[in-house]
Amino acid sequence: MIYPATKKDYPVLIDVWESAVKATHHFLSEEDFQFYKSHIPIYFQHVSLFMYKNESGEIKGFLGVDGDSIEMLFVDNTSRGAGIGKILLDYAINELNARCVDVNEQNKQALDFYYHLGFAEVGRSEYDGEGKGYPILHLEKR
Image (cartoon, rainbow, N blue to C red; front, side):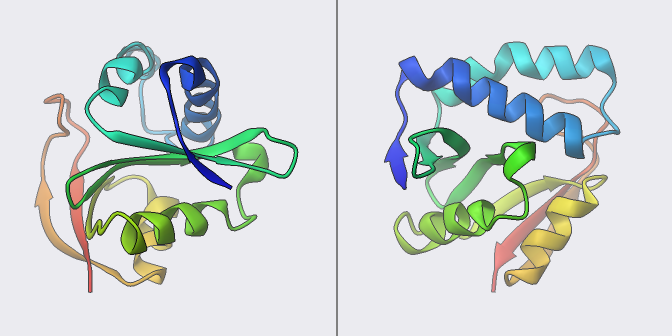
């Protein structure tokens, strides 16, 4: 179900990212959406990247971890609510020892997901990692 991702998987992972972000990040301007989309392959190079494949071998979600931090976790919008996010999160915690995650403050669905699974807010930044005005909540697994 969970496999390491390689560069050949990037096009599908970007499609998954786009599907997830369009469904959950309504606060992003179109300009910023395009900016982040163009930078995804760069971000991929700075994390240990894993993908979730369903029984048919289709990539339905992915996870990027750096050290003890979950840097990205996205599930294709057509597969949201099927438990894939929890499977990826459990893998990050139990197999990769990840304990921290940063979440856009405006992304209530993601915040609710992490709070429900035992994460708590430990800090806040006014700007995201690119210096854009999207506040970030820093969460840790308790």
